[in-house]
Image: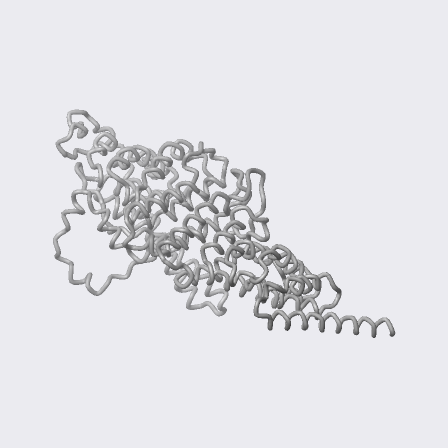
Length: 548
């Protein structure tokens, strides 16, 4: 009992002594002359009194600026308090950290570095104090604070890194308009920080950072071409388009597919798709048969989505490969296996590429399109190619019509079943079947719409957004569209220069298609999991995290 009383007295004495030191410093006109008083406050951190340590956590930051020669000792003492067992001491010490920089901004980076590590704390009140402290420093010096936070993203310990990314996503990115001032300078700075961090990220993290960069004003609608090119180059880097392709590397396949979807909005804005399309042509087509079935369709969808924005030169190079794949999925005889959703993608791609370079189809499909160029090759006989191609068109049409008949019957059965369904679970299951049937009917309708013009000796290729692909949300016609029935076609869409127009008239379904498929490609990424290799990345090829 006596020992407890002594401890209480000692505790009170420590607190009283600190109050005296604090009051003396507070009243002193030239505080720098009271070095021993400030040293006494720092020394209190080594004591046993909880209350004294809490008080020291307040006093150290309050008088910090007056004793630059003791700055290192004072900061070390405050950091020691942050690691105390007692929660109340830790919270008070954390709250005091931003005050160490109030008049000495040169310490912002160091303090934010420490606070970034503290984002892993589990107590709510402590975590809240950390969040508020970082936000306070971001408002004081956004540039230094962001640099320190992104250093954790770039090279931080795994748990700290994940917490910092979550903090950026939840607390910093939504306040970019407030924090990034002057706007252009700070947006440029954070772009450079993001780009450094992208050397080692998961797919989900990459999407988060790319969405953030897209939201910045420097990459907005009025951004010059070189800015859009910068974003495309970031995506190309993540897609590893300079790497030798290995068809057994599922991670690289997923990375490639998802990056192409992420790139689509920039293709629409005029960024070149050449690097992606050339990679597909050179590395993917030769081994396409070896691809996992569940990846084939996603890959063909990316090519279909990109095809309206291909240049004439890229279209000329890619067309032979697309015709080669088309022949595989448009069998000559109805009895051969056909995959209608693959055929839809490839026919759409074929039309858009052929629209840019129509006479390339003369030798490939036996057409007789005259442009006046030597590449027309009109003196050569490609009639066998024409016969083969049109037979395949007729075969896929028969298959599509037969499928439509079955699907229409199936839809009638689904509607009947829906009327009889009693439970919500049963209705939800039937609704899913109805959606699948609707999608199947759209695939068949699209195939028939795209094959019909191709029977001509010199067909007109579809180079506009007339065909709405089955995986895109149906585009509801605007009220104005009903008045345009007799309007003459824009000459730009006839001569193959309609890419820009199409991009500007992007339908609602484009964004839906992109987000759905990117999200599907990214699903499961948050689970992460380290693999062998050079770090964190998207999985199998050695960056540590599986893509799916």
